[in-house]
Length: 65
Image 1: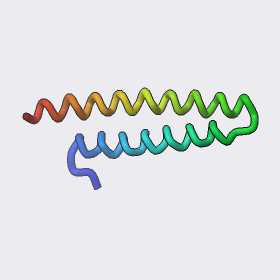
Image 2: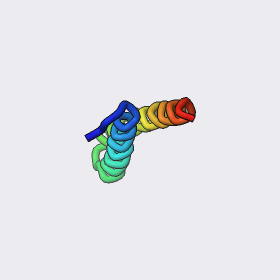
Image 3: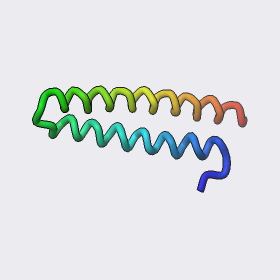
């Protein structure tokens, strides 16, 4: 279980990365164009979250030094 805010952010980052991989795979195997596009959209949203959380970790890591 996370013990500090940075651990929580790292846990969230892992989940966002997993969601990105899953949505990308679902988009790859989707047979209906509308569903494929939905999963591509969701993957791109998760990619934004990964970037945001990664930046927050970077910021917090540098503050600790």
